[in-house]
Image (cartoon, rainbow, N blue to C red; front, side, top):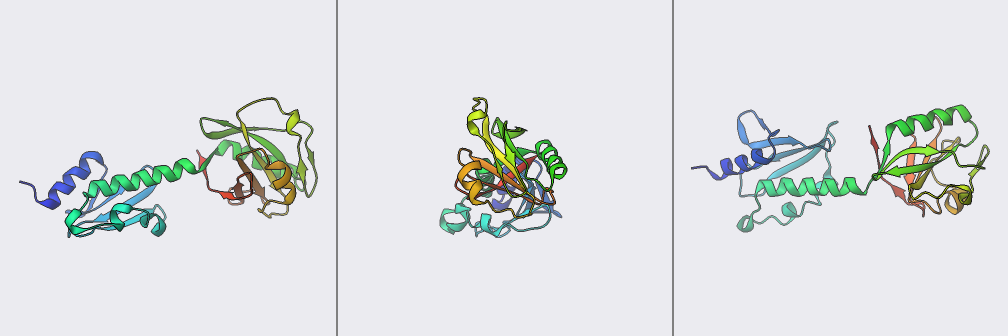
Length: 221
């Protein structure tokens, strides 16, 4: 007959076979999820509230995400959730967060960054094509006008294509904030708009919606 702790552990490893224990302690485990986040759970005092840490591969603790786990916030000893339920809720939260982020291919960014360096100190602009919810390539807009301080293109000259849903352009000044020109012209019809700042590296990129609000994005390798 399994104890309460043993039963929790058996349920966990059934669905998460990559579960690791701390030594031989089955009541303190860690699980690396496919989002690169490690869930560290100590349920040695179950059915009391377990201690949970969400850590990325660099050791950073996600305190904000922890506060979103309803089963932990509302934990009551008389109405406990299983440890597996807690883990599944965390997985669901991570998937929802990931689905809301803009996704862009690394090869696309590498190619665009190279062109930005080649055209510096002039701005450089591209139109982004989305396939299966991921920006996979860019085209150079016909008739685009670029200078040291701005870039303008003409949407009416673009071929009709439902896949063109974003823009990417450089700011040779290094400033990653959108200008009025960006907001009134470049961003106007697109769901995601990337700004790449000098010196044109992956650490100098931001993404915005058509209203200029910053968006989180994921680089797909």
